[in-house]
Length: 243
Image (cartoon, rainbow, N blue to C red; front, side):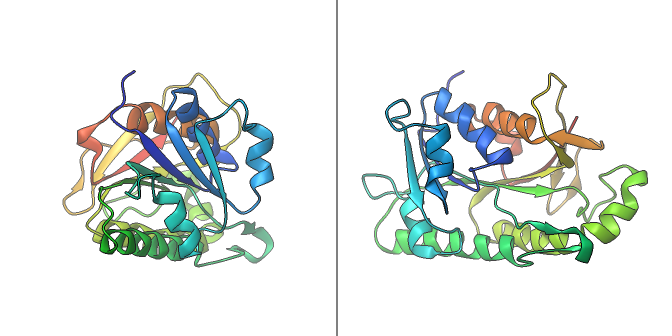
C-alpha cells in the first residue's frame, strides 16, 4: 500500500486506538512522533534500537511547548498528519470523567500550536484525525436504540467534551476527518468495519449503526484507510465506525 503521508504525530498513543494506529504506521515505515506523559510505556513496546522511525516526546497534550515539538519536523515545518486519541479516564460511580475538559483543551492547544509554527515560518497543512464517539450527531441517532440509557447518562460528560472538541476542529480551517467509534472493546478481530459518513454542514450521507468496535480494529482501520492511503471523500467529514 502506497502512502503520500511521510510524517505522523500521535497524541494519546500509549494505549488503545492510538497505540494500534501507531503500530501499523511504524510497520509501514512512516516517520512518527508520539507525545507521552510517561515515555517508558512506549519505550517498552518500541525499543529505540528496533524502531528508529519513532521519536517519543515527554509531555502533555495540554502543554503547547510539548505539542509544538511533536508536530514540528526535523526541518522545522509541520508534519503531514496528526492523530489525536486523547481522552480522560471515567469515574463511573459519579457518571463523569477525571478531566471534563480534556479533549476541548487538547484541540485548542493543538490548533494554537499549528498557528504559532506558521507564524514562525513553518510550512505544511497537517491532516488532523481526532477520535471521538458516536452519540453526538446533529442529524439523527447513530447508535442502537437499546444503548440510549448509556449514552444519555453514563456518557454525558465525555460527550459534552468531545462535542466541543469536534466543533473546534471543524471551525479551525484545517483539513480533518473526525472519527466517531461505537462503544470500544479490546482485542483485534477479523470483523468488517462498517463506515457511515456525515458532512458537518449538510448532514448524513450514509449510515453505519452498531454496538461495538475494538480499539485495535479502530486503530488498524485508521492506518489502512487514512494514514497509509489517501481517501479524499473522507476529508472534512465525520465518520461513524463500528463492527
